[in-house]
Image (cartoon, rainbow, N blue to C red):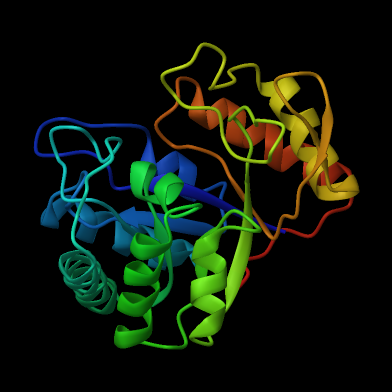
Length: 249
């Protein structure tokens, strides 16, 4: 099972999360590309630190929205969105290469991630961007998303992701961060949920129902309060359950 985290999300003197500590825990790093967070020097440092630890590097592409941290929907024209995603992937490819590593997957961030679960035009735009850069790059998203259907139409490998510290709706989508209870904080509770996801393919939704979830990679957010403690609890629980932790690519 792969463990991934969103990293490189500081900007200038503003630091967010403990990238070094998270890189000692995860197997894959979703590195910001400068559109929602991250500056070139900081992103290069993260890529170098990931390369030193053998952590795989992915491009976390986003809407061009630094002020909103990429968490606001933007009604971007498909052609513009495709170009912006190509631009971001290219930038991180160069940084990873200089760090002695390579870029091996793509994961959308924030509002873009959630939008392309159901928004077919934007989903197609992102899939076409990834395919244009490198048809061999896998993409992460929720199982059953229209993004996956568009990616598969182009022959891209899709990797189903589950979220350790996010609440789920009964339809399998994530509860909006604007709603109370959308983000979980208790490390042991989160570790227990992840164990159920990985071992049984089940998770409890906010209404108390149990829903099916397909998971090839688990995201442990690097910017959540107590992120390192949460990620450590998840890793230790999976190891204790006999789950082999390894990057999906």
